[in-house]
Amino acid sequence: MVTIIADEGKNQIGMELYQGLISQEVKTEYILLDNVEVKPCVSCGGCSYKTYGKCTVRDDGDFIYPKILRSNVLIFVSPITFGSYSFKIKRVFDKIGLIMDRHYFVENKEIVKGGKLGSKFKFFAIGDKENCIEEEIIAFQNLFHENLIITRGIGKAYIADKTLSEEMRNQIIEEVRSV
Image 1 (cartoon, rainbow, N blue to C red):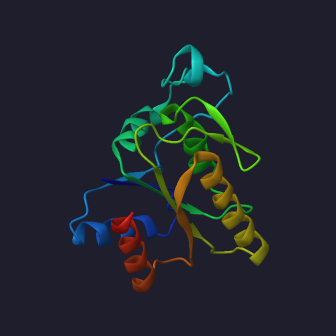
Image 2 (image 1 turned 90 degrees about the vertical axis):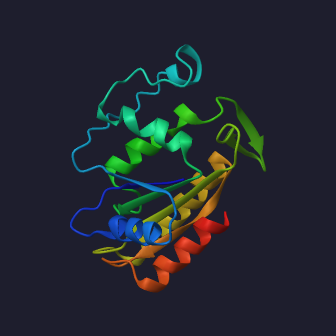
Image 3 (image 1 turned 60 degrees about the vertical axis):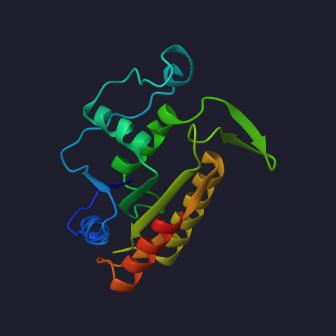
């Protein structure tokens, strides 16, 4: 199963991808963050130790993490904001530690999280580059690469411009199916 978590703004890139995946009979869940309040992680360590797998900061986003856990593939759709994800997507990502192995490892001289329990973390991001300068796009791609390293994941970042081209949509669908 694929889970798309989208902070769409005025563009509908995530919905376009969702419709493309559904048309190819790929089981997909679409979560729009427009009316979901995800509070920031407060780094209390609760999810890793005290209440393993459960966040002590309760919010509207609590329903998201079991869906990610059941997924084979996670896709974030976000406007590129100062070279990063939107604050809503960032807050969801910060709390993904809830479903990761709580152990940290040193791999290639970097601290990495244990990854998704029971499977490889398959992760893609689509950044909407509307109103971005080139340096922000590069920073977004670098951030995503680091996210893959620290989660021991596999995947790819895509850069869209207000809409998802048919070519890019088909490429993402093919990659999601092959992972």
